[in-house]
Length: 296
Image (cartoon, rainbow, N blue to C red; front, side):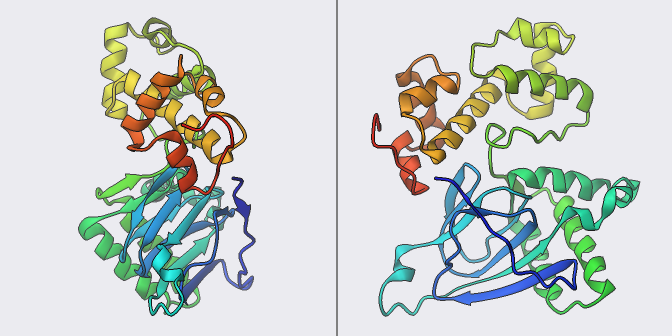
């Protein structure tokens, strides 16, 4: 299933656009756009799709979605039943990163926001007291005008950037262009090597030599920066790539499992179920994508 490109009906007189939607159900399908989107759900329940991430959502759901990252908030079936009195409503804030310009984002004071916008390329969900504080700012934002709208956006993004109650949504295997590491030079080399070679076996000795470290030192270094072992991270990349191919629906499951670096189909299915609690075919149907052959 290919996501639809959506050209947003912006007011071209402004750099930031805010909408409040109130509908019987959300009608925008799986789509993407170059604008960064902040989405706050006021009413409604359903399933949220961001990249290769899928999970239920409910009232209060709050996310920031980076540019060109496919997404959809799909209401539960009950919202589409005849005679339903259910409602779906949300606040949306849209803007392009370019409104800040390179000079402003390079300012030391903008470091938190700069890293937030980079992480948003995977989509970010907020929770806890942070979500309550950010949601309050989103609702207040509707009433801002003129330069106050830009100032309020910076305040809103800073609140997101400094929150510790968040979850990255799409996997590194799906969004294979996002690096956010304090040691960018060395980690970028490792990351690039993984992304170039994940479809084949990668020995610990070869990837540690890319980092210029012994295998033991590499394992410590890698875990400190990713909070995962190298094997866990590599498996996440492979599963993320497989999810991307499943959503596209062009390949049989046995073929895409090999292209994602799994040595046999049964190993792929076992790892996929462990990661997603679903069979590959169940995951594919969640996105509305199907393949007629080799479904498991």
